[in-house]
Length: 423
Image 1: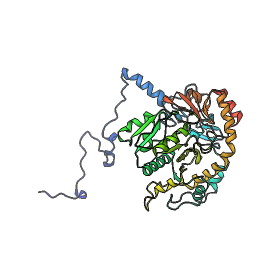
Image 2: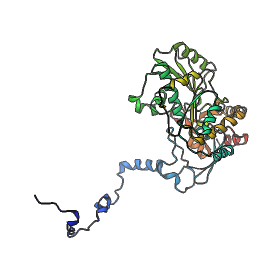
Image 3: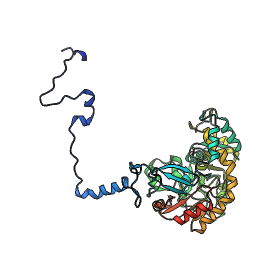
Image 4: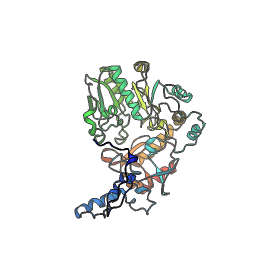
């Protein structure tokens, strides 16, 4: 057998006549292996598809002057919360005002999905962030001082999360451990997150159906606002929003939560109130539904722009179900982030001062035909058209046929007048 020589012993290959020698590094590039082909025109039957793609990804907002191209970079700035999209790239935000990447100014009735309860770039929030001498600690393994302070300010024991979905997941797992029952009763129109356990309780088919094969259960669905009747034997918890937010700002009857409390007690199930959107002053209460809940989950406005959430054990003994060993079996690297906790302390201090204002501003919305409660409102409309008129709202309800308003709780009457006149 011929002995193979080392690479350094080989002679360099001679280029073949009529061919250009390509360096080895360039051979790995497909473009170097073949000449560039001329672009073929779209077939006539595909030209409508091309025009639709151009309108979707490349066209400027209708009725607006040509911009600098920032809105035409693929999916940049596209909100995929519903079939409607908002072509908007935020560049600056302060109070209730937003300036986009092309210098256009908008009134923000979204509050960044209800997060900016005290207004964008709130001075007290910024001051609290700057004052922090610890930016990141060791989660709940070795907490920062400000995280310990936040726990002391919350009205019940809490297990902290990073996203609202985390808090829902914690609450649902608490019910699984405490009751030993796998069943969840949830409501039509509900949104609780997109993690597998939270997703099983979410009612929106666009999120849930692609993963239905792998979702835990059983999940029992009932109409929101109605007495669910006797709970199934395998039902370990009922999860409910005090006001359905993403579903379209639906407000149940005043005794709805009381009825659910009675049904849960009779079956030995836990009642989980998902106040991630509706809580922390959004509907005029700091802790809506807490008097009936076994667990109350909050998020969004709690961190005022930084991710933090909490599952609050209104029945304090439920905290003990997580004593499962030396290792915490549900945690995250960023649990109890110091900057987020610093913001949460400001929110808990300032939001109670705004509850009367929330009621007043909510009445203004009601007078303009918006249903809902407090500053969680919705009505029929088109979010894209509102954006063209200089107002940011969020698509909501089935198929995005509604527009949702969750503005900063600090919104003034003058700003409301301006928003209503534009819409």
